[in-house]
Amino acid sequence: MLSPLLSAIFRIIVSIPSRIRLHLCNVDAHAGACSAAAPSRPASRAMRRQHHLALAAMLACAACVALSSVSTPALADAKHPTKGGRHKSKASRNATANAACTGACAKRCKGKAAACAASAPSGPLPAPVMAGLARARVPLSSVSVVVQRVGGTRPRLTWNANKPMLPASTMKLVTTYAGLSILGPDYRWRTSVYRDGSVDASGVLHGNLYIQGTGDPKLVPEELIELVNKIRKQGIVALDGNLILDKRWFDTSTRDLPAFDNNADSPYNVGPDPLLYAFKSLSFTLNPSRNGKVSIDVTPPLAQLEIVNQLHETRGACNGVLQSATPAITPMSQGIVQAVFRGNYPARCGGRTVNIAALDHSSFFAGGFLALWKQAGGTFTGTVREGATPSHAQWVAAHRGMELSNIVHDINKLSNNTMTRNLFLSIGAVGARPIASHIPVTLAPPVPSTPARSAQVIRDFLAKSALAMPELRLDNGSGLSRNEYVSAASMAKLLVAANTSPVAQAFIESLPIAGVDGTMRHRLTGAPVGGNARIKTGTLRNVRAIAGYVAAANGESYVVVSFINDAHAAAARQAHDALLQWVYQSAR
Image 1 (cartoon, rainbow, N blue to C red):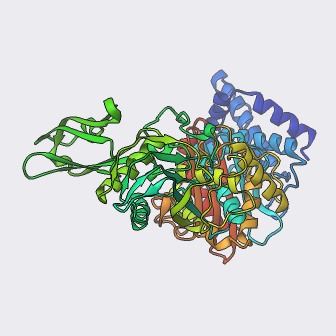
Image 2 (tube, rainbow, N blue to C red):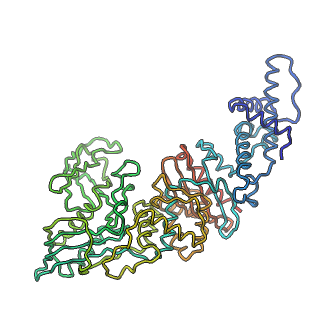
Image 3 (cartoon, rainbow, N blue to C red):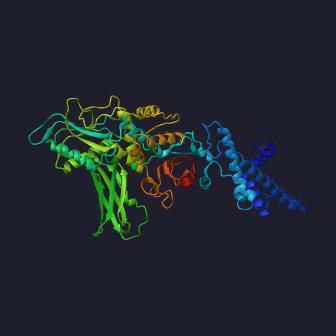
């Protein structure tokens, strides 16, 4: 405990405005203060002023020395971590004191005298992390950290561990771990086709064709054409009735939602849907050609989409982002949709690919299905609408999607929001009783899935797994939300549990490898920790997050979680990288 004298000195010092404290330390550095004895009293007025400043700086350094010697739960060696935040207020006060000391004296006195060097506390986090936060101007109150050895019982490092934080895309770890555990790594979504009416000798279906979706997160053109071919193998080559889209698996309130940040045409904003197709996004590829024209290709093809190419190839310089490469998507009469490209396209720009989220889910799926149907030689004369598959309908064909373990790999490596949201709602639809995906049945869930239902299924699973997360708040399961919260302590507990769970391999292998792949491929490429950490990242405006595992140089593995919620979070990436490097090199 601080002596009353030093406590009084410290209260005086921290009450001085920071600019004056910094000035004191400047004077101290130049005047050679921080010595054991105060200088003698100068005679002149100017010299007396200098004397007073130097004396104040000496007292500041003395207070720093005293503070650096105090052991509190938050600042003590990590071999003796805090328990349950019992000393939170005291730890916070000491953290504030150390921050004041560092800013007022230690930084300015560094390398000037041994006493000043001793007075520079590292703070509650490793020095490289503190330095990164300081450069980013992120206060410690905006940061939470947990580092724990895998197999250990106590954290190696904690800070604001129980504080609810916005986790951004690291929330995908909660959804994917729960999904793997509840549905199983081998779970596969089913897209089924039914019909009513009759099929004549010419292969014409005189009735309706029903397509029932269960939320396959990755139904792409290569898979949808397989379903088309399966229908044709059943003798159906022409549709004389209507195309009915059965989307009861998810509640209607979950579809075609407003964009998270008003960027409705950005693929990352595409919401969930039982008949999600190609992420509801059009990929336009533009290439200059030898004849002076710009070719435009689109994936996937949609039956109602027309490309209007009014681009002019020029010889000018390529000036970065091309407005002409982004089409205007315009609905026309009779259900036609035009993608209009206008303007100049410098040949020096080479090939460009532009991805745009377009149309509503039902229009996009129907357009994609009918385009492939017609490419295969089929005809369609009816209309498209949503509806329920009747109980008397006959099964025609089904497509089984990718295994969940592969879906989770894509979700976490690439941080795909749309796939995560489909998985999240699938957890609510299927619950703890997965329906065998190979059984052809006309069955919708008893209650169409909602975010609230999915969140409850996940909370029930966590409770049964002895993973108490009282602060956990789930919105859509992807982290693309301002209404999802979790603490670093809870996320660390989940990672520890996942490491020894039956789904450990599928879960851990889905995480990006630092400096190698996924969202971590360009980070820490030249650092020793590169290739030795599997880290899920999270990014939102004012949010940066990391969570995962580090295989340290000492042969141990550590769980690492850190959230930063602050207006300057975008500048704090170096702090997170420094934390990962510290764990690799220094954690014991």
